[in-house]
Image 1 (cartoon, rainbow, N blue to C red):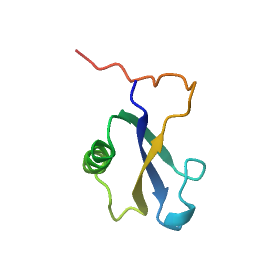
Image 2: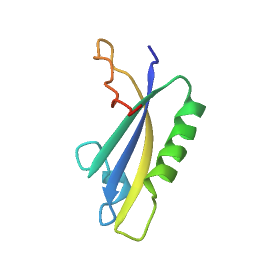
Image 3: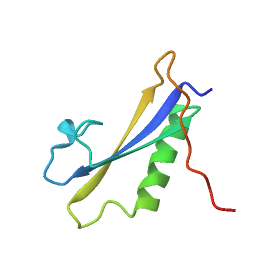
Length: 81
């Protein structure tokens, strides 16, 4: 199981970047990654797929976090065949 998580936070444009967190974000997208480089690359891919940044009063902040010991595995959305 990867030790790192790529965390994409979609925050309101009125919120300062330093105050953008999992608690204040409009949406949170988390994905397991193996390396810090993969974390940044996944973050950029997430931004492109989400169409952010945009002029709609939102921005995307990417953080890389270590998985907490004993954390439950991440659930992934089922993909249509």
